[in-house]
Length: 116
Image (tube, rainbow, N blue to C red; front, side):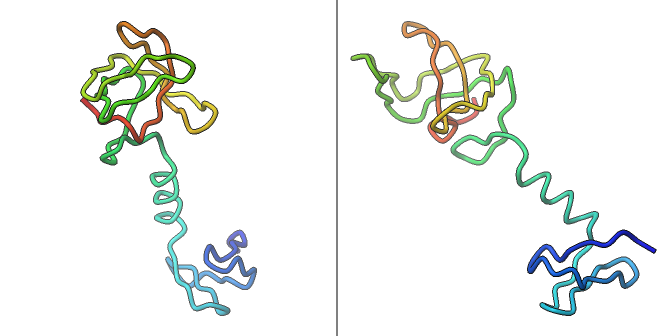
């Protein structure tokens, strides 16, 4: 007998295996656990830029708008290229650590950059 799987839509414990698909009698949802797991892994995987392209450590990105540097009078101009980024789990949604020429080390939000 297969391991019991709860319905991903309504979380019902009454789901049953019918060949290659699992079915939920409570809500009528049908799913393949193999493709559902792959889709979940892909959806939650990685950091994406403003255009939806996946980013990785070591990538180069371009800032898409002028950004004020908090606690300073400096501004990172739109179009500034940033090389060798590092992905981090930072506070306040800042998920890119980098060094910008003329400014120094700082964190950026991926929504304000595009892959170069």
